[in-house]
Image (cartoon, rainbow, N blue to C red; front, top):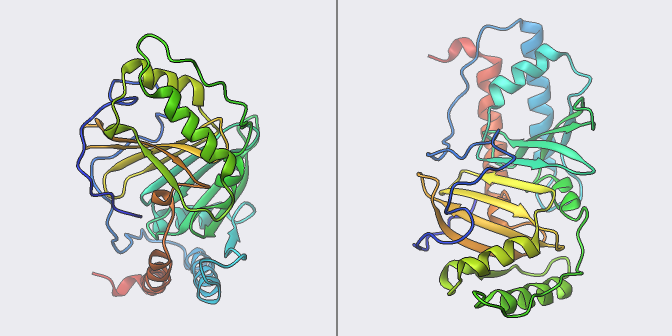
Amino acid sequence: MKEFPLPVVAIGPGSQPEDEALQYMPLPSAMMTFALPVIDEADPALMAAACAVVERLRDEMQATPLDSATIPTVELQDMDTEVVRLLNQTMGEGEVSIAVRGSGQYRIQETVFASVWRVHEFATDGRLIGDTIMACAIPPMVAQWAQDGVSLDCKIPEKDAGLMNAPAVLTEIVGKAKAYKAGDGAHVINLTLLPMSPEDLECLTQTLGVGAVTILSRGYGNCRITSTKLPNVWWVQYFNSMDTLILNTIEVSEVPEVALASSEDYEDSIDRLGEWLQVMQAPESVD
């Protein structure tokens, strides 16, 4: 995760109470820290099966750089439910939670190992149809489904009573979105440092709309990232521990960098998986 050290004041969408659809992933007040697993007594056969999954993942990560086209993956859907329960217990929940809704429905949770993700796919009737462990900067379906239903057909409003900078900001956003190509650097518009009226912010909210992906990160401060109805355009909003908006930005990128695990995260998780594996294989040696 990337730190954003700029001190700012609260303004804009999110600074007032909201009735959001994704309340099942609340924003926490503290940063997660790594800790050794607390393991209940488990059947030796189940423990051996869980260890085999962790060891396979660790070995694939060692053989596969983070920027590789191949992603280390372990499918859990058809695995013994008790083994999956044990993996859930030992791998825990990390800093980033992701919901994808629309044509594809996913719940994605980073584990305590940064860059290692649990990916749950659901049918339209709510049935779990996919359960995967994946090691990568961010699961690829996030960028894929962020493009679901997007369009560059954006009507920019005329300057009207109460509107100050929204038309100009929208013109800039649409221009950058049209020009964006895979691999381009992010273009960030910091709304917090611009003179924006309530009407401006409401105009941006209504014009950009809400896309299929919501990312909640609890790394260095709480961060809510939401895709919009424009391709590669995201709201990125930072909150303090009181859930008050302190930084409000719009970013043009494939996925905002703050949501991505880094190469350092990936390498560190390989080491920690090895340590964790030792604990799982010899729990009696842990005080």
